[in-house]
Image (cartoon, rainbow, N blue to C red; front, side, top):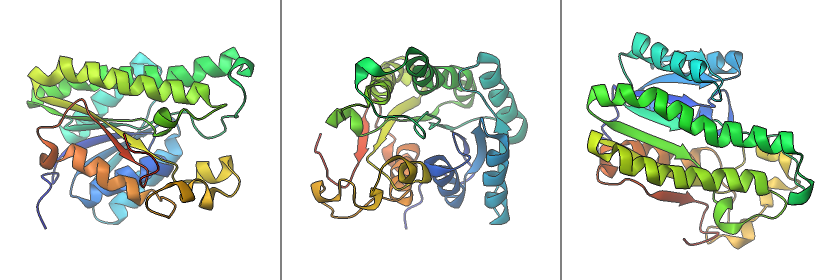
Length: 253
């Protein structure tokens, strides 16, 4: 098996107390990386880190509110303290669980603002807090997690769709600005994935959208991990500003 070049890399994953974030954190640890698990749910982040260290890998946890400048800077300080820098940032933290589907004109303004604060501003805040460490280290990779729903334009879901579309746009701009520093910025856009949040969000989640895909099965968290590892690895060393859609062929971009 070809070496992905992730052994001993320093990785920060936000929103990693559970769901896709936990899967990403565990996947990077399994590839030999050292992982800082960041989440607003401090207990959940600590649990993820404990699961990783129980398997013999290196992991630490840190509380973060990605909408707060000081909190994001504290993550950078923690990363420098325990890992000596940052090579990879996975901006996974997002509001998804608990969002109510409704016509766009009925979305409450505080809900809209909260979604944008976490899903959009949070990506900006974490990236600007950690890129100085990447510059010091000679480069790195940022993986911003969007969603395949951007391309299908899911109805009654505008706040979420708009926020994830913004992530793609921001990533393209960041890729232009950070390329000279050797920092690559790419997007991972998962399709509907059977996380705990998804199971609680949609009835018959196990069969939702399966018939529309070229691959006639539902996606699990592990189906997304390979994409994240690729985007962080040496195998994608000449790739930046791009969006990788992992939806089992439900739509072709």
